[in-house]
Image (cartoon, rainbow, N blue to C red; front, side):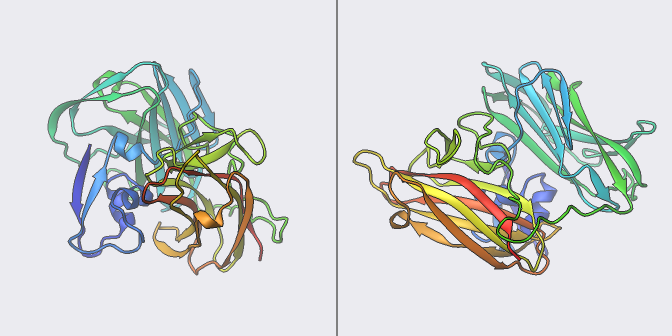
Length: 377
């Protein structure tokens, strides 16, 4: 399911994504936007929801029963569904946006039908942990069309819902410092009383995350850099987002690599976001090889990009080398390296992204393994 939105004066892709509970990456991909910083008044955007919005989302989809909590993430098994609720932090400065994500995955071997009485698909509630009093509800003040519909969630498919809470209560007033519980719900008739919760704390100040040590031996900032952890063969590897890729056993090291281009004539994306510091210089290292099909044709470009965003999620810059099929060896891994140069002022987040762009009758793929992002200076 999807809706459309016409860009108004003052809109940014980030503000539109936040308004509709989506992300900049999803809206850019769905609307073929090359530069997330450039949209135009009057431009009509497609806003995906439900399974369409979930196509590029990643969650830790461990098939577990009961309820588990790890850091700022909780999982719970509800029948044939795995709920994953997460926040981007566990401790927040006062007034800082709390990004809340609920993922619902069908981990059974059968189709699951979900019936909705309105166009609302999910809800989030924030409570004071001291007395469990409700302080904020995402759906309060919103209107939803009365329309009964059924969504079929096939085995392995998921729905992802994401919103930003600005630490205001239901009256629009800032909430006090303290501990809070966030609850996530899918409002399908079959799941109305089944939710999942996670705890956060709002503090006056938060100790910054230590910056990795400088020099060539600096710590790798990426999670799961060797692609050894996969929820499923055809899902993105844990810690990464992506589409049109799958787990390959032809790796440089370890057991697995990420292969881009499961559908050989369609774009494939593999990306991960990490925290960085402006004015610093980082180094990106990765290994790649072209996978040649017997009698295959290789026509593609591999973009290796680093997008920079500020704390509000606004685009502030990009590093963008590109490689054609002539630059990547056939059936043998080769090491690649690039320096970012000085990170733009204001940048706090780096989105490391590999994009496989085929053309013509391409039927070959590209494998990526052992990715490193570390600080140099």
